[in-house]
Image (cartoon, rainbow, N blue to C red; front, side, top):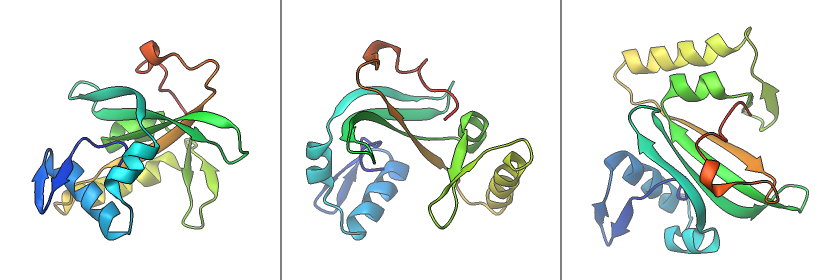
Amino acid sequence: MILCADAVLDGEDLIGDPTEGALIVLAAKGGLDIAETRTSYPRVAEVPFDSDYKFMATFHNMTGADGKPVVRCYVKGAPDVLISRGGSYRDPDGSLVAVTDDNRHLALEANDRLAASGERVMVVAQRDFDPKSFDRRGTCSGWSRT
């Protein structure tokens, strides 16, 4: 989530959104170098956060699991929005599971439980695009079920 955040650390001072700050501090505590990661994978496009669509997305040139180039999209946002658009999720063991009408309610119910207890809930997602057909101008319309 370092790549899908605009917050920066200036020494011990956070510049930017506190929620994004929490994400980058968590990444730093996990051993990631914020500046190095952002330099290695610069943004090639973005969809800035907007309260109407309730998510932010950034796009980066990367290498897919098969070794081929991809444009990887990282998204963070409101659970109801991203859960409704998601086509799969990762099990705790890392395997992909298709989102279906039979299991989608589980994520929504978990979100409701956490929110009811006063927790801030955010969903993160990713999707890979073929660089040959990726259109930087249509990045907002390009986000659909994955």
